[in-house]
Amino acid sequence: MKPFDRRSFLQMLAAAGSAPFVLDIGAAHAETPLTVGILYSGSKQDYGFNQSHAQAAAALKKQPGIKVIEEERVPETIAAQRSMEGMIRQDGAQLILATSFGYFKPHVLEMAAKYPDVTFAHTGGVWTAGMPENIGTFYAYIFEAQYISGIVAGHMTKSKKLGLVAAKPTPNLLRSINAFAIGARSVDPAIQVQVIFTGDWVLPVREAEATNTLVDQGADVIAAQVDSPKVVIETAEKRGVMSCGYHSSQAEVAPNGYLTGAEWNWITPYLVYAGSVRGGKKPEHYLRAGISDHFVKNSPFGKLVTPEARAAADKARADLIGGTLVVYSGPLKDNKGNVVIPAGVMQSSNDRALDGINYLVEGIIGQV
Image (cartoon, rainbow, N blue to C red; front, side, top):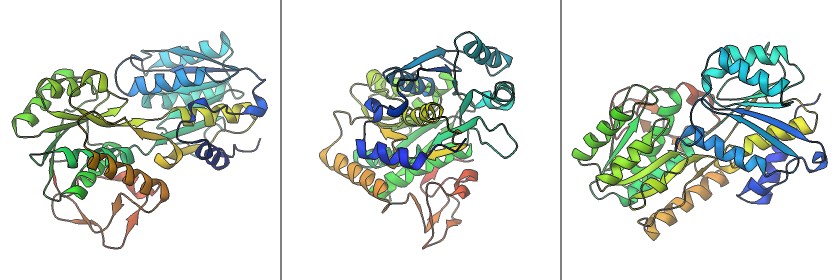
């Protein structure tokens, strides 16, 4: 089979506008029913990562001829294999979307080898030569949306102190934390971002404590990079400060102080893989993209966001889409004073050098 023409499809998405939810993917094959199985590691209503995938699943269900089977709270154990196998054998799933990082090795690899006629697409994994050809991996450059959130926060702060509650200093998180700070400091270089790492992906008590600590130390805008930011955003709202969300929109729990947020737009890669199955094509093994290809987006602006902040955010988004703005552009220093990107050097969103990022940029208070 030939690989799916991802670039042509993404160009079609762009031509359709910024809301691909109503686009009929694989129109030529729409008469062919497609059953898709989706696994979540947590609740579909976690106001976070799992909910972002559940929203994409809901959009996928609206596509003609597509049936979606879902199972939530599936552990990253042999239970994941049982869930996938049940979807394939009992429900006839032709496409499995495995949304949690720990599902990849060994579970997706083993199931893909066992069921070569089924396509498996995994969030965040990296396909390498020798792995089953029926595996696709996908992720999104959410740090681009975090950069825009940082611009909004930079315009809205009065104390020039921003706080960010994060789980662990992994490369993907560091890339987004830095982008948030770079965006904020593009508004005012005097702005500082204090980061507190909780140590794990879901620690509600620690997340609330960290949020309160940041507010006590003067932060008037709080951002989050944990699996379910609900506690962070709720705590910020109770303390009367502004907030920026992550994964999916948390505006519902912070009607007064929510400014915007960085959101995944998983429906786009979902449609890519649905199209490859319907078209009888190999899955895209390494699918990555950002704002310009509708893989990420920002939450609608909250009521506090000023016209100036909105305009600056909209311009940044347009520049990212147009390719005239690169978030990681030199000269750039880390928060220890070392030059990490020299003047005149730009690391574009798909630069694999960013995959191993291990520093916090200038203006961030915190340690890796």
